[in-house]
Length: 281
Image (cartoon, rainbow, N blue to C red):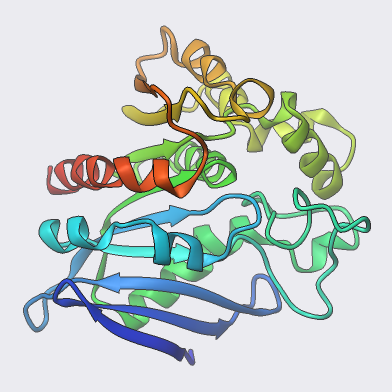
């Protein structure tokens, strides 16, 4: 299993790197970033996965997320994959829109041609990339957690709910909680999975909860000045879905914050500390 190092830099006593490998899941090269804090020889560390939103690559959070100081303090590896396969042969939105195709993989395995050949982000994240991480980094995959932003918040919620017990903690910044009922999700799920809405439910956090999936708790931060709040994100639907299920949802409406990395970086240390507490439990 060959791993190409694109770049490394020392940060907060640890190493921030960007890497590339040939993915069997997507059939393309895939890039991802990893921050490894300073640690003793032979020591393995818990892992926090971060899934980015529409239009992003691993670079957005790596450059603007301000997670490294908190990860160094708590001794956590931070992993940020790309949001979709990429390459000359990878199909994109035919009209060049930002909310489908390249940069908009929605963390699922597509079943509709031509997207089914490469858009295999669910398998990539559930199966392939953890193996790559374990083979090349001091990662303890018995202690891992997951978070994400927007489309990546959708991914974090659904991956965690579909894999009970895998993640010690799950949190999100401004997630798409019910993609089956908002324009971003309806476009993506129809394009990748076809028109049968029953097939969409496995990729809709609210629907998965309604079907019986459970995690102990969720932390969600949402800005009140987010321009996508009512039309695309609709966190009240997650609140409604969790009510009476035993899922302890902490939904924090953050006054005046928008959808940007100014918002994410402000509350990232809170999330990292919250994950660290549960990864130590």
